[in-house]
Every structure is written in C-alpha cells, then in structure tokens.
Image (cartoon, rainbow, N blue to C red; front, side, top):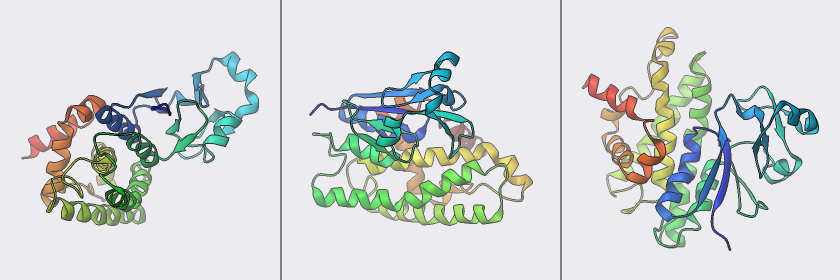
Length: 265
C-alpha cells in the first residue's frame, strides 16, 4: 500500500500541523494544499482541490453550498468531496489514490501514525495505542471548547468563558499529573499525544492577542498564569517547540508568546 496523505485546508492551520509534524518525524510523504481563510471560498473543495477563476465558478454553480462553521460565504464542494468528507469540513485528508477521505485533525494525525514503522508514534503495542487514544479522547472537550472560545473572543459572554475555563483546567490538570511521572505525556517516548497537545494548545494561546477585548468585557486571559500554575506542562510545550520537526512546521507562531513571558518575568 502506498504511504502518504493529501490534506486540504485553510492555511496556516495548527490542526494541520499535527499531521505535518508526525509526517516529518516518521518520514511519511504529505502534501498540504490550501490558502488563507479569506481565499478558501475561491477553491474547489475536492480530493483534487484547485483554485477557481470567476469563469470556473460559473461552470461549477451546481457545486455551490452555503458555508458553515467559520465560513459564511458560498463554497464550492463537489459531490465526491461530500461523499468522502460527509460533514463537509476542513482539514480534509485523502489517501494517495483519492478513494478514502479522512476528517477531524486527530484522525488525520492517527492516519499518519499508523503508517509509521519505526518511531512508535502510536505506541509500541496495542495497549500503548489504546493509552494514546485515551489521551487524545480526553482532549476532545478542550479542543471543541477552545475553537468556540476563539471564535467568540470579541463578543465574549460569561457562559462561554466559564465553559472554556472549566475545559482548560480539566485538560491541563490531567496533562500536568501525567508529566510528573513520564518524560512525555503518558510515556517516556514521544507519541502523537504530545503532537496533538502541542498544536491544540499553541492555537489556544492565541487568546493572548485579544487581551484588551476580554478586559473590556470584564474577563482575563484563561491562560494568564499557565506557566506558573502548570509548570511541567509549560516546560513541555517550550521543549517541544525547540524540536526541529516541530519548529520547522510552526515557524514563528509561538514567538510572540515567548517574548511576552520574557517581558513579564
């Protein structure tokens, strides 16, 4: 079976970085195709995505669909795309032959890890793989809540803020406890648990760009004291950011956060 994956998404997207980082570590070929969020409506959503001209759009009106979950404009999704990705979301991944569609970032991450023969990214045996799944599943609430939270930062309300704070504390309490006993989350070797945590939490930290908007509504940053309240988790995040396979994918994404901590320390 041919190894590899093709991923279509808006870019940059920390949820896509999960698969990219794992692929770099495991040596699995991955092709990422996409554009900035404002340009994604000008693309054909398909297993073979492509940028559309105005003339193309007129020819493809039958594929027009109303955007949801972050996209309010018309999107061009082929019938084949909806068949392979029935929820119609991105990131959307496809097997090398384009016949299998994979959706949700952790599932796409798993698809890479299952092709890994040497790095044990999905654990060393079926029991470790199940433990990996336990951590990934435990992070689903945090992942869902932080996406809703980031969308609502400008018009924050108490209910949304409290949901985020509760999910944040539950998630980080578990990660912090795990790191008291092992070098990596749940294990003494790197797995996709670390990759998923790193990408999800790095994206969540973008709340820091909206500190003034939150203040105007009477709220503080949920992560304001992250580095002191969860020191092992904070150190792990920074350590992962310095690994080549991580840093080459995320680029300067976390630099603002590191500068902020230096300025306040």
